[in-house]
Image (cartoon, rainbow, N blue to C red; front, side, top):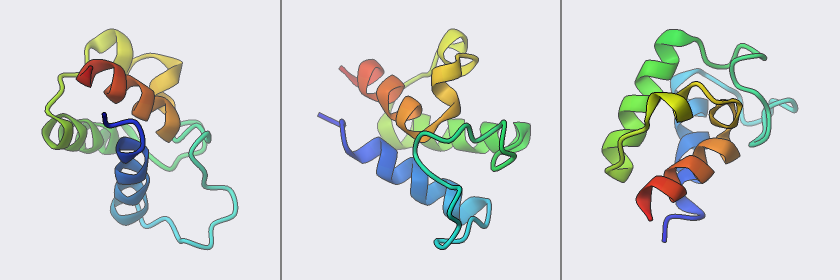
Length: 84
């Protein structure tokens, strides 16, 4: 149902909220956003609030702290799983 949408929305949110240039060659949907300093702990809080509101899901702490949630594609998979 939400399979394609969360990754697009999350990518746009990260780009807009954290001033990531569209020309940034490193930025991608499988990049670890935290390891490469695109998102910090405050940004994670903002991103989480947006995702939960936008997709009407509650992300459990286990998913939030997982390696999967560190990438845009991983966030998308978590949201799709929670929304089913």
